[in-house]
Image (cartoon, rainbow over all chains, first blue to last red; front, side, top):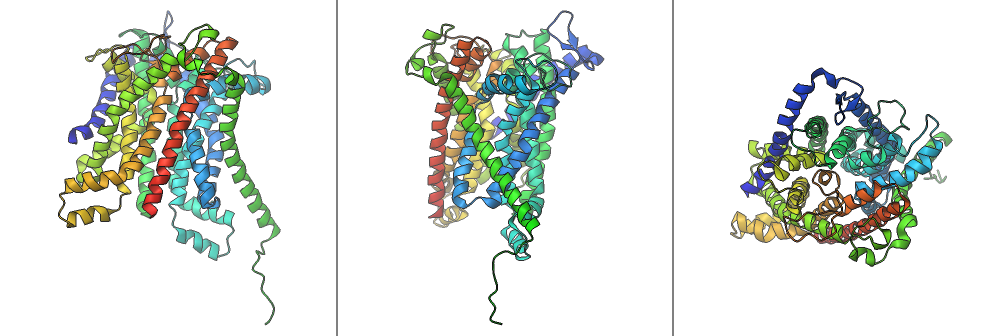
Length: 281
Length: 295
């Protein structure tokens, strides 16, 4: 039993041990070249400016959050304060099915539907291509709606009944109870939901690779193709990257960056959740 | 005072309006999120519904649309996720039992493990592919691009999820069960093995099925493990080369010709059907679990 328990620690140690030696070594060779606007480590001569990967990631995640936050939070408020017991029993499993759609299917949807039928047709700036950060962001948004909805719903549903009843007794309407009393009381849990969803969008690989393309363009036009940090790992790792090659070294470097950033967000998110659990249990 | 007091709301028109608008926005959001599923499935169906036939399950991947099917990726997914589940489920369940039943609360060691599991669950899936590439494919294990390597990576990915859901299921077992058994003279181990574990099974099963369905749909980590190739035979063992459903779809999708678009969509429909059935089983199991608890 103890042996089983230590397995999870072994995995974490394995991740750290696999990522960081190569990442640090690569970082030392690249040095300050990393602050640059051209990322082409697989070409001759290689270029290591990491900024395009960051802007690509930020655009995709920001668009995803823009799509998912209002819809996800509204779904959470609906589930916790508006839906009847039976409606809840129907809606929750359907949301779970949405959460269970494989990312490759969502990517396909972005590639075959969102990009050609919407982004290419209606996006006004530039000359839209088959790939776009806008499409990838939208589809990643679909991916994280159920995460926001379910974690935030847990938080809002954990707000004690007495608080709701007190507000109703004072003459508040259902919206006022839901949006002012319950939402504020469960705010920390809601924030945690957003952070966890953010981390999920941040690490999403397949959608970014399929929909935003694999060209690390440094641009501010969301209708352009872009490459995210995680998409680069997927892209460069497809070919059998040989140990010591540029492809091999850089995917571990990017992997380490990805790991550290998501780790920070997850720690903060989980800590907030632990806090509201303490407060209401 | 014989005047009747109306209990109907006497809200100002403004408040009524805002409340109505808010309610409309909520219903709209739910409608949008549920409509997404319909939108996605129906666009796939329009693209490839006509192609669906049992032949797709018996033929092998090919660049020739008339002879292309999904047998080897389906069998490959089954192998990889099946073996991963065989490894991750017992390990995860034992960890959950240990943390819930045997480790002292607030114990430093168990706090460390808990924190570790939480964070492991949030690590991007593609990073698990990197550890697979460094240690399992090459490194000291050296299994190469095989079913065994892929199963090991997927097992690592599933482990934290299974631990988390099993712990919740175990926590939901009323303490009175345990206390009753202990009062009757059972050893702690007997109480856990004969009472707590059986009552936690429906909950654990629900969570584990969801973990399995997530694993079946996972593509990113195996992208790094050589699964992105046309393998036109079924795996025969741990050391076989393999491909899986999501990456076969990915492979077809990276070719922009129309017929591959259709094949990719057809594969997605098959994959979604498998996951839908798994989800349905999970939902039914959970219903049974909650009903039992409420009796």
